[in-house]
Picture 1 (cartoon, rainbow, N blue to C red):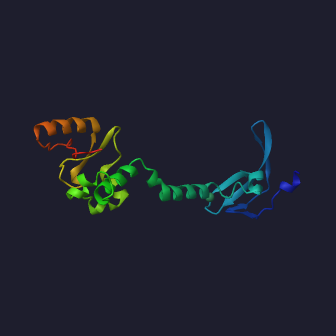
Picture 2: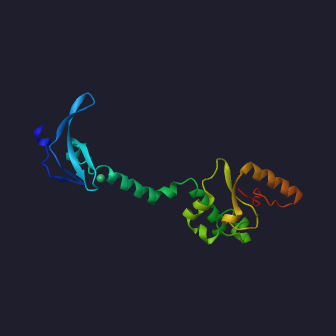
Picture 3: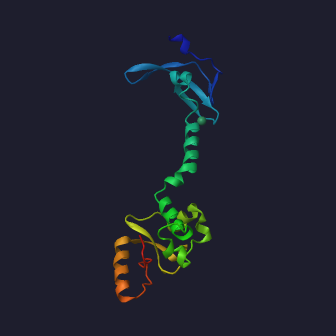
Amino acid sequence: MGTTLLLEVGEELGWLTVIGPSLLLPSGDRRRRFTPCLCRCGEVVTVTTHHLINGDTRSCGCLRKQTTAKNARKHGLKKHPLYMTWCAMRARCNNPKNAAYKNYGGRGISVCKRWDSFQAFLEDMGERPENLTLERKDNDGNYEPENCCWDTRSNQNKNQRRRLRSRKRSNGCNGPPPGAP
Ligand SMILES: [Zn+2]
């Protein structure tokens, strides 16, 4: 071992090109061999020679960052806490097999065209404040930016009970659809 770990100057490993002889540098309580490299992105880095040889290190870190950003774009939105809210809203309005459809899609309530995009829904509504649910101000209105807000479920139930007794419609932010889950 030892000498077999040395790399030639100019050698390419992934995005890295060796630009100098490896050096023994202190690392923790011992000394490790490091190799100065130029990354294809222009960054100069000193990487652990061992990682360079076994393939653990293939860039200055920019490749890993790129992959992470790509994955976040691809899968991140589906993991967003509001993704299920968005799906449920669309199911209530668009899917006759949905248990709540009769109170939504079945009553002519629809989701606006813009909110076919989860991204647009997120932009318009913003993050959901803790313990609040998506509500429509006008119970007969559609799911669209002007008619939607975040409200508490407890308010919702209270108002629903009150309204059922008094048969009065609330114009505020608290109006729940009848039979709201
Ligand atoms: Zn780089």
